[in-house]
Image (tube, rainbow, N blue to C red; front, side, top):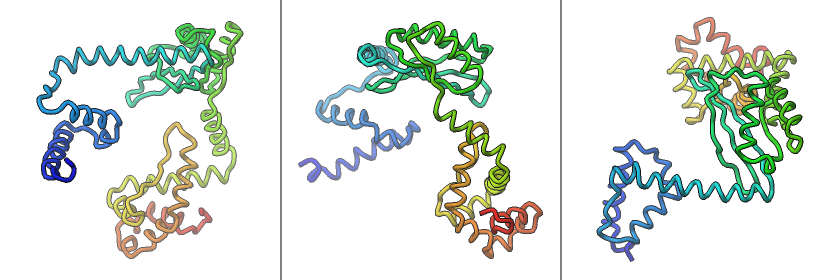
Length: 287
C-alpha cells in the first residue's frame, strides 16, 4: 500500500538517505550490506518517534555491545574447532611505508575468522622468531584443535615450520599453494627466454600507456572503459594476467596504434612510441 500511495514521500526519504551518504562520504556499495537493509526494516517497524543514537551511544555503549556480540560469535567457532579441528593461516604483507604486519586467521568447516595481527617491523624474521610467533598462535587456538599451519614457502618459514613440527608432533606445516604457484611462475619468467622477453614487452606496453594521461584516455575509448591489468612488484602471477589481458584487447590495441589519432600524435614520432608501436603491430612476433 505504502509503495503505491506514498511514492512521492518515498522519493523524499530516499533522497535524504542518499544525502546522508554523500555528505558523510560513505561508499555507495554500503547499500548492498545486509545490515543496511536490516536497519531500514527495523526503523520502519519501530514507527514514528524513534530517537536516533547519540554520539556517546555510537562511540561507547553500542560499540561495547558489538564487541561482546562478536566475542560470542567467536565462541561458536571455537566450539566447532574442538569438533572438526582447524587450520591456522599466516599472511604477511608490507604497507607503502614499508611497515610489515603478519595477520593470523583460523579456518574450519564453519568458516574463516581473523584472529589477530602482529607488527613485525622491528622483528628479525629468523626461523627461530617465526617459530616462536607460530608457537604462540597455536597456544592461543589450542594445540589439540590445530591440524595444520599454512604459511608462505620462504626458506625461513619452511625451517620454522619444521622446527614447530618437531616440538608439536600432532600438527603439520603446509606451504601456501598460491605462493608455490607464484614461485613457479617466477621460475618460468626467469628461466624461459620466450617468457622473459614477452613479459618484458608486455610491461613496456602497459607502462607506456599508463604513464601518459592522453594515451590512457584514448585506450579507454577503444576498450570501452575497461582497464589493462598491470604487473605488481611482488606478484609474478600478475605478469601472466597482464599478458592474458593484452591478448584479450589485441584488436583494440592494434586499432588504436593504427588509427589516424595515433599517427598524428606527438607520441608516434618519439623513439619509445615507435618501439611500442612495433611491439603492438607484431613486427617482431609479440602476439
